[in-house]
Length: 259
Length: 284
Figure 1 (tube, rainbow over the protein chains, first blue to last red):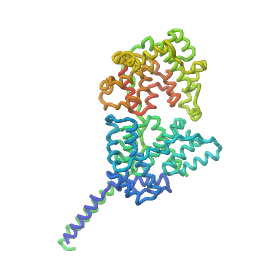
Figure 2: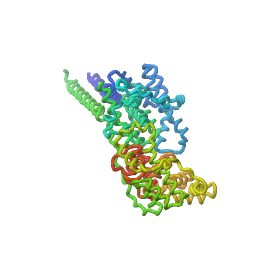
Figure 3: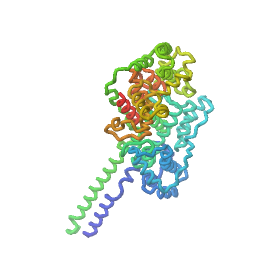
């Protein structure tokens, strides 16, 4: 009997101490926030996406993830992976070859994780120069642009809907920005990609210093050691742009929740 | 319950219950959403840090002249006054005319994009102030200048790259140092800083005391802001009424009463601002 109790005690101890609390810690809030963001959005299988965005063996994690998830989710994660693994090439093309303590740690980590993957295409449709929109600015067009923005979920959908609403003059900028500022189209375009980064990092539980998303920002713009994604963007952006990105992020959350 | 199991079973159960409680508490506190740093909880940027601490030198004659124009309420009269005081081929005259042209074009010849920010109060006040200053300028004043003959020769003689090619590297380096330390013309300051940077002659360890040396590309990215700041300081025109302040704030928007350093602080990433600030301190 005494041996049975000892065995019971030992099993309980093993369960308590070794049951990998980090997986639970990191996925719980992210899933909660993701659920708040969009009631209809599919919840990403956090364990597998987490392994892709944080694990040392990116290729294996990506293969496993792609074998087990929906095509839509596969594309969303692949976009993040490609964006990160494209950075070493971009820096090379930019002629940044000298030692750079603000970028090198993130760059070296990206090189290590991306080593077994093919170099992603440099073709990025989102960065194409947009032709001017035909200006049809009646109330219906504006209202429909805002509805489209309310329903947008993926990065591409959100960027397209945001820019469409901007071009149509549909964005309530006086509500979004406390200081009454108005955005130039270049600002509207640059800022929505920062906001998308933040939303994806929350959704994918990948805002920490070792996530691919943070490594991409740190390798491109430079950051201090241990920066998480928020801090990395804080360092990369001018204060006025950081404030604007925060305001857009908050407004988008409220706008999509109110639908 | 037998006497042999009596002390062990309750002890085991108590231990398991205690450890389970500890684990649940640990997970709950760590997973509290309020403890997770999300972007929308970020604090806004810290206020500008000590950007006017180093003492300024008295204005030079050319700095005083440049300052008169950069703070003039009526730019057309100020330009005419400048033309009466300087030789028609003087590089400073062309530099200041170009400054006026560039700054006033923002207000007088806005591009199609500017319609999008017409209602922006952070830009509007500065655009209106520029409009008032630029109101009297003729169309000819807003055309890019065409330098010829002696004016072009004198202009080129200020460019360290040109001097290095036509004369010698030591003369060019001397010229670059002289202009980086004294010129109130932003374009000459930037040409000179870039020349010194390219040839490894910027005293990096003096400029970047106590911090990691930035890369050349990062310094390069901060040169325009640094040159504007240095040139406006040398003409005593960095205040809210300075031409560079109006020009910068008309484009990006600034709170009322901003001076040029504050405008740069708000419109540059932190590292770029710090590089520009350190270059400006060094150039004082």
